Image (cartoon, rainbow, N blue to C red; front, side):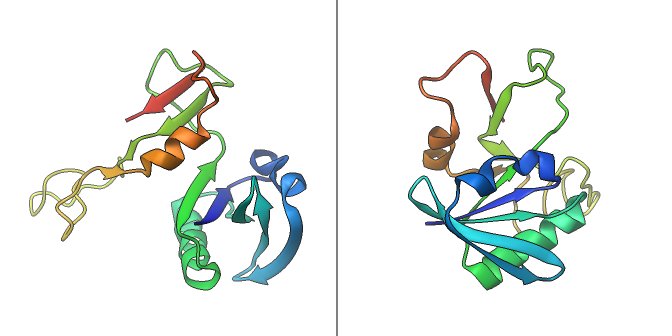
Length: 142
């Protein structure tokens, strides 16, 4: 496994670069990628900047240039769940693109030619990301 960790802002990446063993910096596509070992896993950390397009471009480079097999996006997000509070850890089990609508050709949220509106995450990685033991402030988002 080679893990890519994307953050939109430097504050969201705080601590990760310092935790990397044998860090090496690489510049590509106007982004600085830092490779190294994180918790004995080959990892690449990068700031994507803000927005879905920036995150998508950064993710594509992580896969194409750095051979990343798994991607984690760190950072701040809103929630529609009234039980999620500021500072809570939320780890997704599945993902949707909430603002995608190719209807009437396809059902709302379905990504054309995939037949999917929901994308499962790697559950083994999800379990590794959750605080152990599962704590009341860790939520699984579906």
